Length: 293
Image (tube, rainbow, N blue to C red; front, top):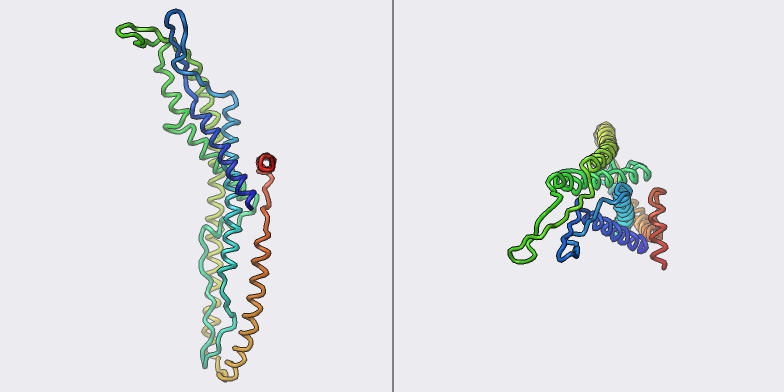
């Protein structure tokens, strides 16, 4: 699990490097000629040819990081749950003419719904949600691509700079993007973004439906339990003292067994390893080699 934390950190560092690479992209290089010598005023940083691959790599890195952090969180939660368990004897204490309270099941929420997805489905959700978010961030209003497109039409091919007091020096502006190329990139990414968003919405709708169906089942089950409780209450008539002595002896045995099983469960949970989803294996293998080096 410490290796998973290390790989998660490396995924984050690599994704940050990619973000920095995207962040420096601009629309033009600016040069100035003084005394016959040309100087670069603004370094041109055109859009990389593999920008779509870069964006997808960045999204995959964040998805992989999310996958690992979820796995680490799951193990920590399981260990916390086991360590926090307190013995609860499921045989109710005998009471004269008192029946056990109905074991009413609480309604489930969306957290339960997400837990019903298979590992592959949840990994796919993390993947498409992350990619949709990062592509949207790149193309939507005030995103990098949006700013480049807005800036491009207003760039002049020649600018003037006052290098010496009172003297204007021409600045040559070399535009390395076209409106059509940026529009084409936007359309490609927008299409991919819509497809990813549809997949994200599919999973969200599926989870909501699972929760609705499960709560309907729980409600019906609780109605049956409540009815059974009422009937049992009317029929209960036990000899209190004999039942109480028997209950105490059995409870003591169960408590000892509970502590034994809880310690074994904690030991087993501590030895758990992450079952890596195939879609993240390549990324993880690459960082495992770096970690070992």
